[in-house]
Amino acid sequence: MSGKWLLGITVCLCAAAQPRFGTGHSIGTVSTEGNLIVMTLNEGALGRANLFDLAGRTVRFTRKGSGYTIENRPLAWDPEFGSELSGPQVTLRRPRPRSRAERTKVTIEDVIAAEGPRLPDVAHAQKKFYTGIVVVMEHGAKPSRELIERANGIRERWMDYWETVTGHRASMTATPR
Figure 1: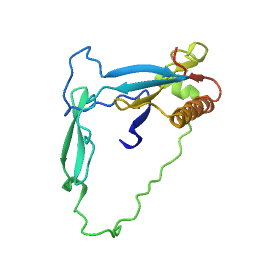
Figure 2 (figure 1 turned 30 degrees about the vertical axis):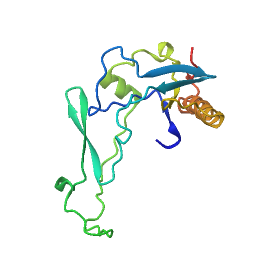
Figure 3 (figure 1 turned 180 degrees about the vertical axis):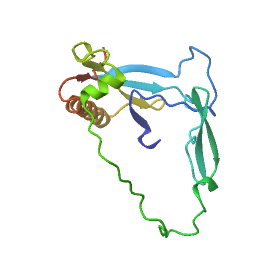
Figure 4 (figure 1 turned 135 degrees about the vertical axis):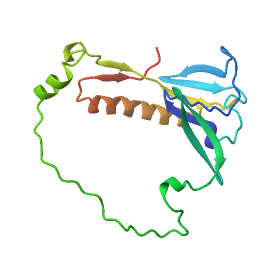
């Protein structure tokens, strides 16, 4: 891991090939640094240090029940995607697919008639959202001031972005309680 840290927006990574610890087994410690959550992992919490060293290998995700299994396999061409290339040059033999269709005017009333009214309605919909910016550190490492400043910059931009993309109708808080 370069720099011995990871930054996530409340993301959980799971790897089926790694050893499982029993329920309630600690994988590290959690603290706060200003408005950030700092998680310091115990030694070996994520398994082998080279889990994603993919030189000549690939990771294959396969749906299984309500989740996925992960396999670290030798790199091999999947013939389902056509013939393997013998060099870096590619010639496209088919023109881009194009489609033509008649425009259909759809109104909000048409959508409501087909799908029913929005639930909850706008007046009662959630307007304030909570998330966290998590800095994950390797065992024994401490976040530098520069890392904390960068993570806080991401946190501030994330809240601004959320407010903008919701048309200023909702807000995002990324402050630990």
